[in-house]
Length: 111
Image 1 (tube, rainbow, N blue to C red):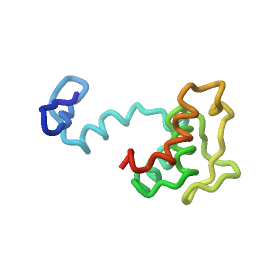
Image 2: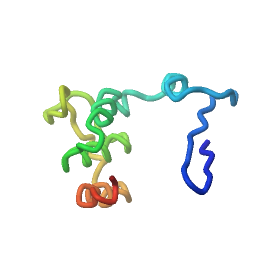
Image 3: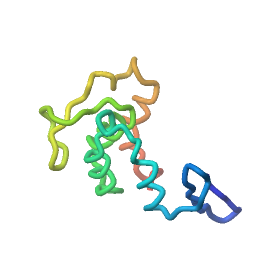
């Protein structure tokens, strides 16, 4: 849940039963049920570590990761890891595909 006022927003992290949590506590609780086969956590961690320094190719990896279309292993080097695309990350399968691929051209808006 996000509580917002006119000036800025603050996150109000909650547990499954509604109790308040810190950000790290919230992530630990909700990530336990996360499908790390479909969404490899090491790819996610690498994307977070890169932050605003994402390359153009990283945006493609980010889009594929968020759509569950990237897996461990394969021929593509991503940080310390080898990954491959499942083939589900393409224009006719995902409506957001072209938007994700154009994000690298809109860095100033993202920052």
